Every structure is written in C-alpha cells, then in structure tokens.
Length: 158
Image (cartoon, rainbow, N blue to C red; front, side, top):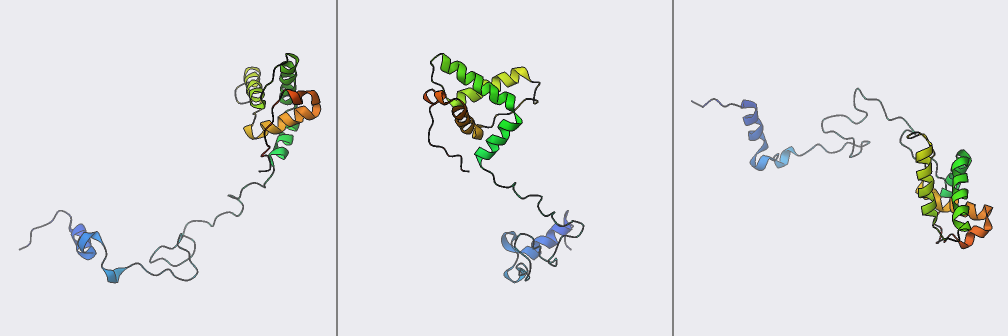
C-alpha cells in the first residue's frame, strides 16, 4: 500500500522530468516552425499573433526624425526669446566687468533666473545639448563676446 502524498500532481511532474528537474532528451522543445522568430515562438502554439492581442501599431515606437543640435537650439531660441535675451544680458554683464565666463555658467544662471521668475515647470527649459550653440549665437550677435567666452571643438553634428 502506497502512502498518500500531499502533492500528487507535483509527484507526477517530477517523475516525468527525470533527474535534476530536466526533461528527458527525447522530450526537447518543439523546433521553431518556419515563418516565426525566436522572440515570438511559443512551443505548442502556431505561429502568428497571440490570441486576444492586437498587432503593434506601426510608427508608435519609432524614434523622432533626426535633427542636429544646432537645429534644435535654433528652434528653442525661436520658442523662448525671453530666455535667449537673458543669455545675452548676463553675457554682456560679465563682459562689461571684464570677466571671462563659460557658456555652461550662463546656462545655469538662466536656469536660476527662470526658476525664480516662472511658476514651477512653466518656464523655459535649457537643454545642455544646446548651450554651445546658444553661446555661438551670442557671439554672432555680439562679436566682442568672443574674447570672453572660451570655445572648445564643437560636437553639434549629432
């Protein structure tokens, strides 16, 4: 007479799996049918979309069209003329005092002033990728600022 077990289904499963909880060699997975890929194939299920799920929407996860940092910065300047004027004002203020400064320091000051002036999350946001292009625009507008702002090699072609 056999003893009753607490988990009869588990005992059947472990007997079928064999040693170390692995399936015997003859019971390996189904081969992947032609027309399906490794990511979507589920053994025992025909290839195709999962029942009850819709197909992915085309274009939903595609990246936005590639633009350069210069183009993005030019768009930002058009959308935020007041913030760009702050860049101009603070750059001219530092130059009038005879002080050299970095574009990053200007950006931080503009961020600070915008944080004080606008309600939370309402003011313009200064993207670090645009700071060097904004500084170059400053020099285009005010050429004498060139001696006060130090420029490194531009990597704005991304």
